[in-house]
Length: 321
Image (cartoon, rainbow, N blue to C red; front, side, top):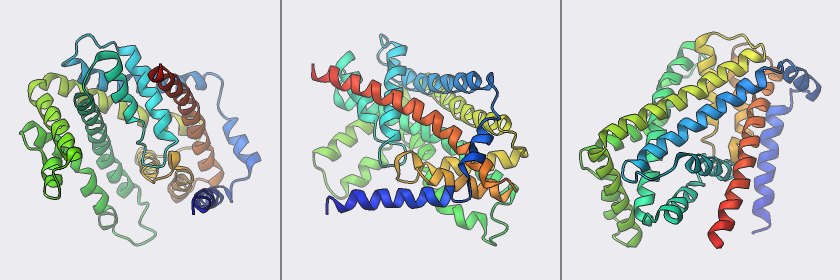
C-alpha cells in the first residue's frame, strides 16, 4: 500500500500536467518567455522582495506587540523558509508554520502556546486580506463572463467558497469580542490536551486583538498591501508577456490562479496550469500564452521555494545543535 500511494499521486500529477500542456508546444512556450526584456526580470524580482517584506512585516508587528526586542530580518528569513516548506507540501499552501513557532521558541524563549498564537493571528490576517481580494476577484469573474458559456450561475457555483472564506474576518471579530469559536466547537467533542492547547492559543490571539488594536490594524494594512502586490505582479507578468486583457479580465485570471493553490497538491501543481488555460482561454488567449504565464510563475515559486528549503534545512540543523 505504501508503494502504491506515491505511484498514484505522481500519476495524478502527470495527468494534470498533461491536461495543461497537451496543447502547448514547448518551442512556442519558449518563444513566449523570450518576450521578456532584460530590465523586466529585476522588476519582477523587486516586486517579490517587497511582497515578502510586507508578509514578514505582518508577522513582525504581531510578535513585536508583546516582544519588543524581536528583530525583523531573521523573521523575514524564517518566513521565506516557511514558504519553501509549504510550497512543496501536500496542502493548500500550509505546512511550514511549525518553523515560525520553533524560531520564536528557540530565539526568544516564547512558550509553545504563545508562539503558536502569533502564527494563528498571522494566518488569520493573511486569509482576511485574501478574502477581501477574493471578493473583488469573484466580482471580476462575473464581470468578465467566464461562466457565461457554461450556463452556470456564478453565485451558485461559488457560494460554498464564499461562505468558507467569510470565516477569517468573522473569526477576528469574534476574538476581539472575547468569543472563542474554535475551542468552543472542539470542547463539544472532547477536552483533551490538544483541545486545551487550541483554547489557550485562541485566548491569547483574542487578547492580542483587544490589547494591541493599533498593531492589529497595522498588521492588517501590511497584509492587504502584500496581497495587492501579488495582483500587481500578475498585471506585470501579463503585460510583459504582451497579453492584452482588460482590467476585469486580468483580475479574473489572477483569481483563478489563486484558487488553484487551494488544491491539495504541492504548489497547486497542474491545477495552476489548468486554471490559466481555462481562464485566459475564455478571453481568447491561446493555451501557449497561458502556459507562458504559468511557467513564469513556476520559475518564481521554485526559485523562492528552493531558497526557502535551503533556509529551512539550515534552521533544522541549528535546532539539533
